[in-house]
Structure formats: structure tokens, C-alpha cells
Length: 193
Image (cartoon, rainbow, N blue to C red; front, top):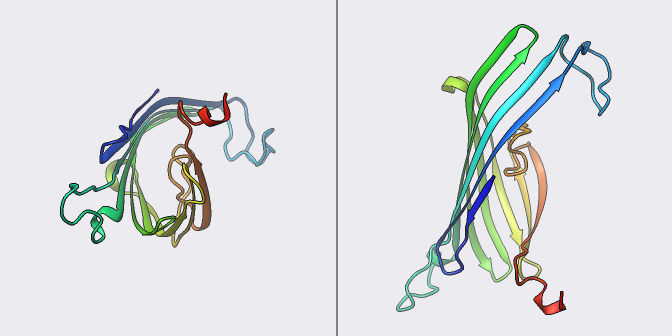
């Protein structure tokens, strides 16, 4: 289930997404090839079930239409926050593994020119009880080649893999590129569809 709030005249927009995921494997043998690629790392039955929720909030500061409109960095900034939470209730053979983990992220972008943004992105994953922390972060450059599209080039100095939240946040180490394209009810009005 997803719910978005993106009014055109608002400084704040947000998206919430909730889901349940379940993966099962029966009678695997560690070291065997997995039919969909890779090798198995467990012996015996395994079930992985997760409840997931993520919230993305974006704030674009806008001044009043009077004095100072467009002056300084204030109106050229965009600040984003991300919170993903996961509750695992897994079963490996006779063992049950349960617990919460959270993923927190922030993005900061400044508009350098009409089609170029410079920024930074950071993400931290905090395991059950806060005793395990992984992080990713680094600089970003976003280009807007045409209306309702952007291409972000980024580099994470450190990183980690998280299969549940990797669609929402790029958290692996090294260079990456993302492409975003916005569609809404008016996107194809000009082409007569």
C-alpha cells in the first residue's frame, strides 16, 4: 500500500509505502546452486517474512513573494528525509529470528543553475537493539535534461546492501547513476493520448 501527498503549491511532499514480503526455501543444501542464481548458504528449511514501512519527506523551502524572493541559498535548496523500518520474523530450521531494524537517510541539494544541482546523500542502517550500524554517503550531482526528468550521479564512500530498501535508497559503496521520470494525469495530454 502506498500513499502520496504532493500538492503543487506546497513546500512539503511525502510518500508512505507499507508492504509484507515472504520468501521460503525447502530442503536446500549449503553450497548447491540456487535455480535463480548464486549458491545456497543454509541447510534445511528457511522462511523469511518481513513487515516493511518507509516514509520519504521532501522539503523545498520557498520564501514569500516579496523582498528577497530568489535571493541566497534558501530558495535554491531541497532537503529530503527517509525512514524505513522493518520487522523480521524468520525461521531457519528450528531457530526463530525476530527483530526490528531501521534505515535512516537524508539528502541535501542546492540548485547551482537551472538544470544542475549539487548535493550530498547519507544513509544509516541500525540493527536490532542498535548494536549494528552500517552507513553509506557521499556527494551527488543532479542534471535535469528536460521537464519532469532528472539524472543523478553519485558516489558513496562506504556502503552496504539492503534488499528491502534498495529501490528507495542507493546504499552500496562506489559510483552510481539514477534516472527519474515523472508521469501524472497530464503527462500525455500534449501527444493526444
